[in-house]
Length: 254
Image 1: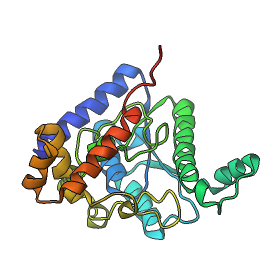
Image 2: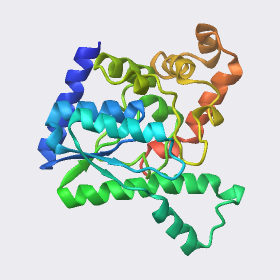
Image 3: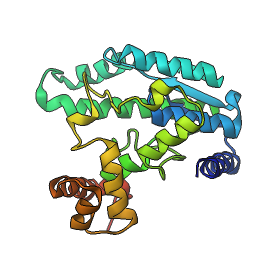
Image 4: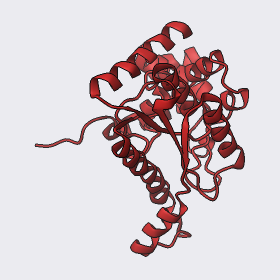
């Protein structure tokens, strides 16, 4: 599965860049498995000199994530820029007179950080005639676990057809650092932000649920029996999918 999948993605990236007349690609590097695999595939398709990785930490970005992103970029031989986004976020809060300690502002500020990163990616894309490469996977896409017009925006999405568990499998197959391959998902859009704070289970459980619901077209009850998890978790996943449908379609008009 891995070799065929890798070849298809590499050809896809190369084709999209060539047909668009772009000079290369730019993507955000977080030190996580999705962005690391995407960067490695872009290098396979285009060569390191045509790939720019933007590392955009905040003051609460874990040191190990920053180190992993920097080391991966060095190993892949790609150009990088490190841009701390705290100053930009603070400028927004100051202009809007927002109290960052107000609990009601936590999620809006989390989404703001994701959108700031995308604005920066498109700045460099415009500057160098590059395409912005999205790093989201299918698991995140189906449950809406991304920021609309933040990490949900891009010119191409090379791995959005792969479930998170498949992403880890291919990253391991390509020999990416084990620390990255096995790293727990943690978006870090606010201090201490972890996947388990928001989702009902880890992707090792969510992926079989999603495959049952959307690939096999099974009912919630059938998936519950097949996967061996309570029906409440299946219904939670379905609810997330339905509630975030607006993120997966173009804005409606009359």
